[in-house]
Structures are given as C-alpha cells and as structure tokens.
Length: 241
Image (cartoon, rainbow, N blue to C red; front, side):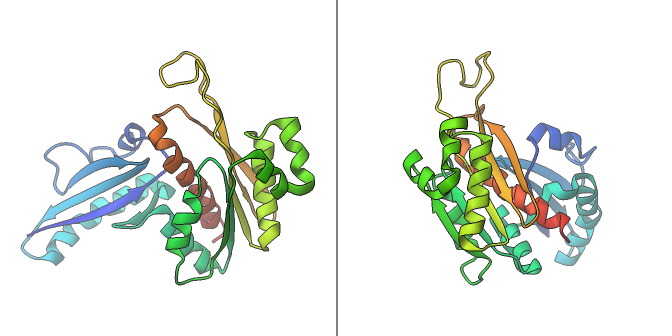
C-alpha cells in the first residue's frame, strides 16, 4: 500500500525552506518528501509504502516530527487546510473576533475568511475599499494621514487596522493597504528597488505594521498579500496561547 500526507507551510521561500530540512528531500529517501509551491503556500507531500495503512502512517511519523521540529511556526496545517482555516480555528479556540479592511487584496480576505467561518461567529465583518474617498470616509478624523503620508503608506495601513477594530468592536483588526502604482524602474528584474505595500494588525494592546514588495509576478501579488496578513494574525494568536 501507498499512503500520502500533506503538510502546509507559509512564511519563507522554497529554497530557504529546503535548507531548513536537512536530507529530507533527497532523491531515493524513504519515506519520500516532495515539495510544491502554489500561490506562496509550500506543501510538503510525504509518501510511504507498507503492508497496511497503519504501517504507512507509522513510517511517516519520524519524518513528520522532524518537519515540525525544523520548521516550527512555518507549519500551519495539513491536507486541505488553508491559512484562513488555521486563523478561524485559532480565533475560535481563544474566543476572539476579527474584522478586516482591505484595498490591495480586493476583497480576497473577506471572501476566504467568510467561507472559512460560515458556521461560526469569529469573523464579524470585512470592508473593501477602492478609492481614496472611501478610505478617507472610513478613517474619519485620521483621514488627514492620506494627504500627509500618502494612501499607500504604513501610517494609513495602521489607521485602517485600528479603525476597523473600533468600528465593529472586534478583538482584532486586520488591514491591507493599497498596492503602489507601478512605475518605470519598479518591475521585477530592474535595478530599482520594488515599491512596498503595507499591512497591519490591531490588537487590544498594540498595532503591528509590516511591509512587503511587489517584486514578483503581478499574478501572485493579491494571494500572497492576503496570506501575509493572515499569517501575521496567526502568529499573534499562537503567541497568545
């Protein structure tokens, strides 16, 4: 018999992750470990042979333990788990709630979180913004940040996270600001530094703002940005255990 098990990871690139798993992905190893990447999620596929399903899964156990030991919090789930599933599960375990505000991700956060929390109450609301007028209205008194800092700034992403948390009375406010407008000299392969976008998490005690760049192919920008925001919240929830 042959059995498989998939472990899902997020937070580093494929080559970096391979370096963190000494000897596990070499050709001819038993059980074998394959690695695939899709929309910035890395999947490790463990395959074992045996005379029964139980024997196959028992043969996988030491390899799975090594993966968890080497990768730690980079591992977020198994099989069909997505980051939004991990986040909603952690929110439920801790009795916490979430609201989101997003621009660059075009509603993807609200979409995936809404589906993951269909039967639960952890995800309260999601606001999708498309222009500076709507952003200014959402920020209220903090709207002057747009003219002073620019709409695609760390300060605005921070204010979005704080405001959405206040607006819906949630424990956490998660925000993704707009992507910067592409200009000559900012595309992948050019010498100039690729422009940044910002995402932020507001908690009852603090606000965290992170940045990333649009250095990869445009098709990956939206799913990667959504996953970066979700992963920021996931790591915070893990730390709050």
